[in-house]
Length: 465
Image (cartoon, rainbow, N blue to C red; front, side, top):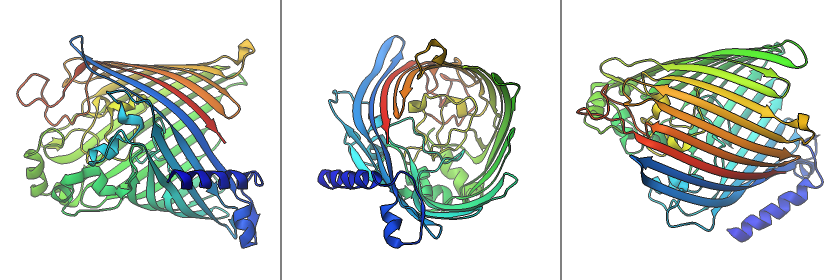
């Protein structure tokens, strides 16, 4: 495998040397020879510490090097082919390993989470003609609920297809078919529904597999962005998401923006049946207690002045009623809340079979507030430096204490190289859990398991080509 990988890398880089951009051709030979190679080489270090009552529950580390190597052909009568090879290769591992940059999801499925892997993460056919675009295959796509989540070593990707049309007035309409999902710490593409629910798939949906049908509308102009998505998964859940953002440039130095968002998820088909309710009622807190009915609303506002930017956001995951599953179902790496933080190692709701779980910010009844400040330092004469400081506060009557997150990123970028140092500090962490009962921790039947502190440190060096 390593020899094949090196040979592939050499050939792709050689081809890219003769083709800087993807072009339109009429000769099948030129279709390949005038394509473009692309990718990145990434080094990643991560350290995670968890403490409870002053005692360390976990101190884990990991180093890995890897990245992506891809090739996109030129366009032949509007058609192009693309493929991307992805890999993560750990080294110098300690006895206690943080597998979140290696094979955590592989480990949940019975493999070795400490073992590196390589995967063909993208392989697709794309067609473009004027405003029409269609693609089919494996691809990295970014939408509100199906997301690559690129804060780890390699991204998550999907298998399916999409058709869309973009109008001259900024309106875009589209629909798709998503059949498989590869989590970012996995080498395997699993059926979308099977990945979400694992061993519970048949009990909840009445089938052992299923697809996600997204339909969407997007509209953009110089000052506005509006998006509406509907994700339909037969006999499981239907999710409708929207967001709208207004951006206004006052002058060359000052711009302000404001936005709102919301989502509603409800169980459909077999997931609303009596057998579903009974099945979940007999399960542990890793599932739920009854019908899926989750909703949230969010607001944000911010300003950009010269090299400084400020953000303030608020979200509210509405409280559940009796007989309802009371957290958002986000099994495909979606983190749609305006108040979301980079403390994503605590989510992992996209791990195999974890589709009914949630973390603190996504549990019903949680109000979240986020403040962020970003500063660039080009004014000093030394270009490329940036710092990002974020603070989030998640409060819920089901929590014994509110959860507080602090994220600090120190970054430097020059040309195609970037280096980031990230610090993450979480106090009264609600853990990776589904809050399926409206009770506080310590009461009978409690399902939220808090720890006092989660601290994490990351060093990420990345070179794109």
